[in-house]
Image (cartoon, rainbow, N blue to C red):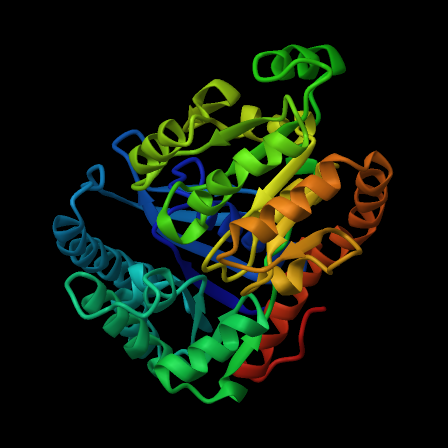
Length: 397
């Protein structure tokens, strides 16, 4: 049996973003395939140093709350890696690990040192790049530092995992990694993680944001520049003019939040929509089910989990024709795509869906079948095959 040590800077119940959920679902699915999975991550003062959850052995280092200042954040990450390395060395005295698997640059230093100490292969999953997030502008600190760590760890790893073919090309081009060392394994989704609330509760929730005869457009995710929400807001006046009484809902928080508020006010949109701010998973997943359309206008998108969640929840979805979204959303099948960076194109496609209920129903039906391609068992089987290739064993799948 292969024993793997996975390092991640977050793991439930400590959730900063989508990475925590990804690592948990992958880890638990790997266990089902017969892989012994240990996760080394961080936790608060109340977190046990070791726990067993979903068949996964979770080891936690105690870390203070992360700083919001980017300059301080880099120093905090370096300290976290030192603490993870020390904890990993102790684990190595008790367990013999066959492979080390790290997620993103945040745990790169600890992963590299532990893999060398264990004389084990190193796998790194790159979920996004600093180069992509900042449209190539990585000449200032801390972007330069993060970009350098990403280049270093991808070239130190025996295998790199990317969530889309788009990301594999980016990793190869930006970091000079041979494409044959980059395996494309998509993110997964479990529809059971998107439970439907009772119809009466969904009706009550929708009434908070739109009347029964109005259309509700959902913008959901981290409110950062690369997610392109500014493009969607720019398109909204045209959408409202063509489909009167259309309302919008922005759910999420991030560094671009205040700028989006200001933009909405300048466009006269505040009477047509709501900024909900950060919300928990229970409400978040319900929003897909009360919306008439989810828009994913990303400028940079390695994969497109929001689109997948919308499709799995029965909400029609339109996305920018870029990055991993192009692979996740087949055009005119599970969803519709529009030219990226183009508010007019976004408005045109949104109006088309909001004006055609039959089109919306067809997209929902086809999306229901499409999301089955992203089953966590399949994702785990592909990951286990990478492990088996590197440690010289037969894949448990």
